Image 1 (tube, rainbow, N blue to C red):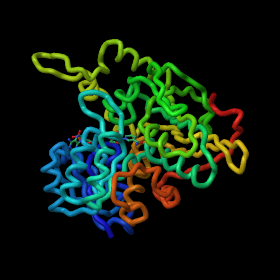
Image 2 (cartoon, rainbow, N blue to C red; image 1 turned 90 degrees about the horizontal axis):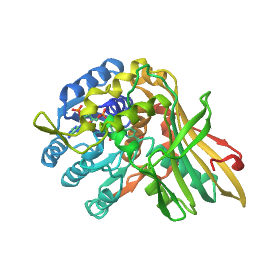
Image 3 (cartoon, rainbow, N blue to C red; image 1 turned 180 degrees about the vertical axis):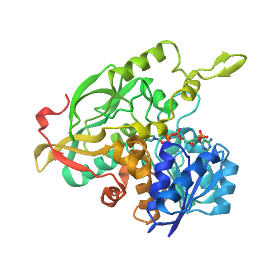
Image 4 (cartoon, helix red, strand yellow; image 1 turned 120 degrees about the vertical axis):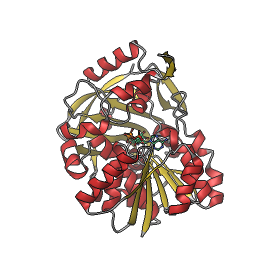
Length: 403
Ligand code: NDP
């Protein structure tokens, strides 16, 4: 039995706390630490009421390596599960190295000063983690995370050679508010407003933000949805790790209403991270915007409808061109019943827990820094439905793939 320390008590942290508490056969003790202890306490109280499991909580500034190291040395968890913000990845990896504790996260490091999505900072820790004999698992959310695992599954079972991957992500749900983001607004807006990029013929190609669009027909009654080509961090590692790959792209669905709000906010400068002076203080407009937008976790109660995320993959099997769509559907109302959370937080928190279970049970345990698609997809995909996310494979016509 293992002890896990969760860092971050936001929308995703709450789902992870519920799901680790559900994994009573793996985790004998669950700890939750975050900047605001009251948020940890509220989650712990809800988990105890709903699941009868006690979680101990701590106030922690995860940017402070010495503070995290001291907590790790005192509590000696087997694993630190990072669901704070991408800014905390490196300080938390440093603390894990200092205390000799395994690490995992759901999003790659971003420097707070400017939006830049690259694995280079975390890959630079490979040798140090290998030497210390500890593991860092990178990107165990849904995208990145399950999308990478779907690609690893396709490579292992469905194709001899993968040619194209289109990762598609749509939230067809409705929260009834004029504008809100589904996870941390600052991180979300930084992701969407940067230039789009996809990988083809061995190199990344750049496009203007939101300038390439397609319509995609989703299963589960969602139907045709407009999608926009974005850069997303899993493209970087998958482009290296998939055999024979010719092209990989990431597409996300946005309603016209969402884009209109975003355009206005962008046009007036509210999405910029460049500090401006306000009443004698330097503030970042996007960080300020975060404080006036709805807390994503607060959307849960009012959300209805489905989300679908999957990988539409073409390639060769036994000499024939094939196309498979591997996907999961999640229903906002069902995820609310299970964890009092909306489906976006749920879709990240469940795979984070499953990744932690893979490490804690030794199924994926190996020293070094590893992107999730380099691990065996089978035990992960066997376990994920037990924690609330089923998945399917549909065979589709290669001639109808996104052009
Ligand atoms: P939230 O903003 O809801 O939660 C973040 C939490 O981290 C908050 O509790 C916050 O504390 C805490 N935190 C921030 N800074 C620090 C710090 N210095 N020390 C300690 N705690 C800190 O975000 P989400 O829950 O929506 O997202 C969590 C993570 O999940 C993000 O990294 C996001 O990028 C990732 N994600 C990954 C996805 C995937 O599919 N791979 C999809 C969606 C999200 P406080 O409450 O005090 O602000």
